[in-house]
Image (tube, rainbow, N blue to C red; front, side):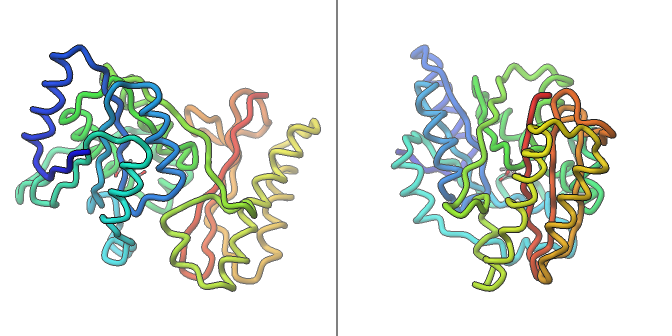
Length: 281
Ligand code: PAF
């Protein structure tokens, strides 16, 4: 497995693979890789001849008061995870390689970026789409792999790829959970033991919402009230949002119909966590 911080070297390597007729899968990450990332890399390795993983904490997707400076990093561990899961190349650039001092071009997806996380993180998806479109231009993959855990990010990326005619297949992959249900996230490391227990209200609320729909409930008000009650019963939890949305447009739903995304964002202490379920009704 090769590691480089240089755009030029990624381009040369991918061109060389292309000359040999090999397909390329791509997994963009911000590092501190866990089993969720590992499942994306393993899937990319199973479905492509070669796999590129980017490992870059993208500063422009963090808001002013967010956790950019404390975001967890462990590049040695990341290399072990990538090698184990079958990656062929890690792109691990410095900020200066990705952003010129006078960088001034952004990719913005309207509408889909506005609800859910977009409400409390108004510049987040602009930062995500800008870095992902740059990475797509650098790697030129056949397929790119994203976790369903960031369901709105997945919807935004799909819309960007469709609208900008990017010739890349976007593959959404299932949420990977801890044994007790907590969705894997690099931010789980911020939780102290008491908060770690409290954080289970997210997966509990999500499972409850999905169960209600499976049992025939369609009224979003009823479903959301149950989910909110579950979260509010936990003193360490503070709701950012609990919503039912269309999984593609991220428009709020009054009735659970179509491709339904039930999504929650909750502060556990100062750590903001997200979780969701997706169901076709
Ligand atoms: O999901 C993430 O880790 C990031 O948002 C991504 C897609 C790597 C862009 O920085």
